[in-house]
Length: 107
Image 1: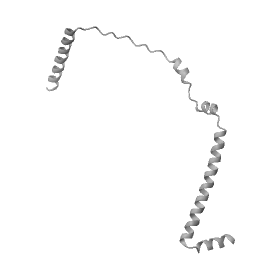
Image 2: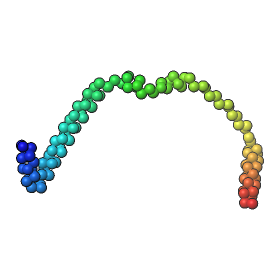
Image 3: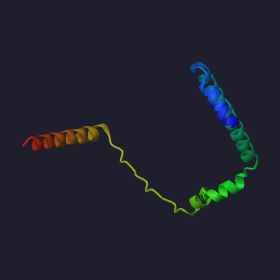
Image 4: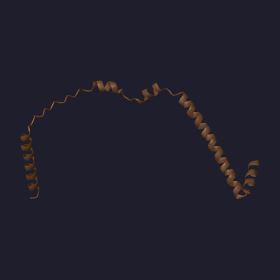
């Protein structure tokens, strides 16, 4: 019966008083949830064990995997030494090949 009386009294209050009561209760509940969450997070961090966490993730040890990978050897590329005349001749050949391709593309 007391709860019914409380609700009747609350319903008879003006709108502004009802809003103040509602927001006060919401802030109080929010603060209680925040305190609970902070305490639970604090205890989780305190009990956190990094070694178990990393082991449970199953991340492979990259140092071992890198050691098992085959070595890739790249061949050495040597460029011939060209003098000025040979470079000019090569440039002319390339320009001639470019103009031939352009003329073929326009057909």
